[in-house]
Image (cartoon, rainbow, N blue to C red):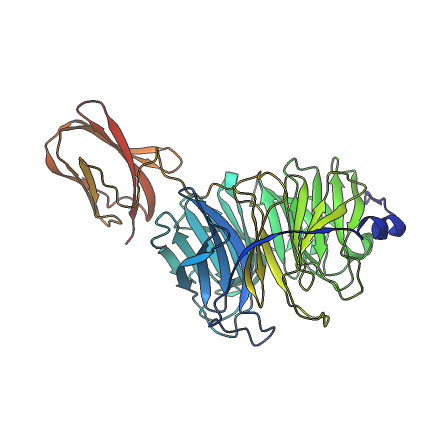
Length: 471
């Protein structure tokens, strides 16, 4: 039995979505030398954000690869680094990004040479270190999502080394050595040709299954996932290509986008699994050419990259009356009922500033509308230490990155040395007094990744530094 009730009127939908305020543009970045794709002339695609060592970065994909833009001063965005994709060129349309600990995970959905790339961001703004770049697990993926509390990576519409899969699941508890847990296509009564996108928190996965509808699954037992709820295209209004969605921080509401021209977004209210309601429709309300792309939710607002209509921001505090409040027009192109303009949005920087990626015009930094919440602290130093050089007046940690041996040099006596993972697990401890000068630590058993080393001096003063293993 399907428990899904729809509460809305088209009259109220059109009435509450006719007024909005244009937001303030703070800065822009675009490299004119990056070529547009042969399909949609999009030089750029997805945007993501990172907060590294108290600086804000925009991460934007292109036909070339991945660009890292320092937006700490939003009026003067500056590219500080770029990484070439496994596949590059005008055949590239899609890239996608997520972060876990100090790592950026990057995928592409075009090119026979594409790879899963994992990059260490802790060395920004000086550099980005590639720690994993291979297609040994899969070649391409349309989108990815990371369930951070569970250290699991989900791949949507994955092209593997031996076939294509609706959804893939990987263990990234060792961040630089992902391990396959399983592939899936059956979600309750939905047999999905592919999952286009997903949102996952604590093993509960909200799956956008394209033309096959929407499903919510429990992956706590990944060997036998449990269906919690499904919604087929015949069971909700203005159904189209079920593209993507985002859950509110309290888990009570979900913004769902059908990437279909003229189809408004839906605001879903979750009670228990037997009482789920679409309580409001959300759209620009212009004509049948409008089309939503990627909605994200922070605090009280849904932020949507809306192709030709740029950035759109909706107040979703009232379940029965989602209201379009703000916008910013990134695109100058006439709507020809295709796919151009604003592709992605990121509203989770500490400043509250909003990042928007326009497919043709590049990065826009827009002034935020609310105090930042749901801030993602990507990678921060410990106790204000400079962890890139791992140097002080008394101590030198080298080489960094290292391979099989780490050297600790000191001008003064050392009482103890301890090594921790980034999650705080102690994996090495050596007590007793070390001689001045060079102290050697065997790191052959450590996997590629980032670690913390705590050096306790004879006077009880301790210093913590970051180092990485890179082979």
